[in-house]
Length: 569
Image (tube, rainbow, N blue to C red; front, side):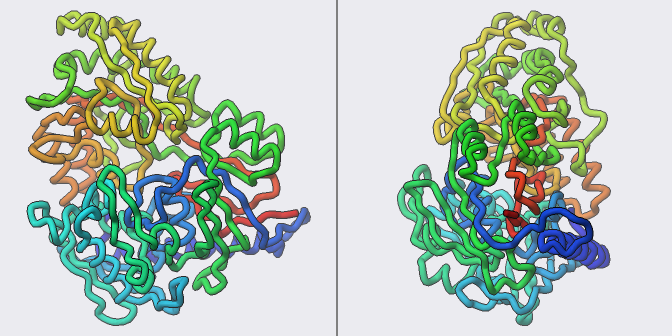
């Protein structure tokens, strides 16, 4: 959320105090200095954590996936971070910040006495080096597959004048003050700076290892030495090695860390793609924890003494509808009729899905963002489960028996979609009962499924989103803002809905928080009237750790940090 100057200082100081107190409490607990009996946790040792996949590489500026960011969050820090266990931005490498009255200039007061892992001093010049690096990307680095988050937040580059950027400049007014100037107001800034993609990296290492020298092509990038072997940040862990053949990243404690030092000597992130195998490895004692626990395993693991750490839901699972109304797209013509889209929405039994396929705490969704995000509207059009109404709408549209190519992913478990095949089966049966004919298409998640969905090949598909930060645009703007040629993204059939595009643009550029919230609420009403997709659920994904692990705080953003973790004997 955008803040005015007097509110920034108070909010930032309060948040920093809360984080500091939390860190002190954790340190006291882990060192055994608190009151009460029980076994004393020991700092030091090694934790092995089961990740669901390999990182794409280790330069977060080119990252867009959860496993790349899982590693990045331990090595790197940004001007802002996220509150521990929450979704709001808090100071990290910036002590605090102020915003000009016009919302275009941000002054960041920086932490002092901080060094990068290679000994380079962190200061305002280093901050501006990173911002200017992103803005001056060229060639392959400007492709969406390389710099997705920069483009999602800032727009274009110095080398792409036809695609303007909202970034204007960065000035180091002294060693500990960096001033960022924008060309227009946006609700995304500064909250987006908590994303690992905007981590501040060592200018020395970036230059020495030619960090921007990408090769290959946009569909198959080859990364330079820096991104594979020399990631250099300021975080509580530093990079030791990446055994790519065996899917294992090893990090070690940064002994010169400027804040509360990590308790672990070593953190190993080991790729175990299969959920059952992750569970078996934990039960065998080969790993100390893993992510994305299958809901059906919660009770078994808890009965065996393991700790299931459930995150608060901050995501959305939806059924994408390729029903664009733009000539020349591959959208299913039947889906261009709003009655057919409404028939699909009325056919889905969300409550049964929540009760039978998702963990306790999941909620049926009525719009494309969680209720905790400012801009959520309580009065959107809703589509209750009603197969009779679905059949009536299909009859009115002359579309009885419409065939839908229903794409769903395999070889994956996502925070919002723990069992894709089971979800497909339930929704497919719902749609069949309502009068549709379903043609199933199952594809491996990466890259086949994601490429097919982004190319608009599916009539309908399952996909979702975990919020990057607490802002409405990060949800509905990501999905439904105008992408190009007066169209939305191909994922939703490249539909053209100027009212939605204009509502999102107005909300994003509104500097007043209350007015912005009202504009996002109106955008949500327009989206649910148009119905470019069907929101299904918000789900609380979980991690699990062994009984002797303490200090791992689950994050709604799946943004856990491991510096507070300790392991007892």
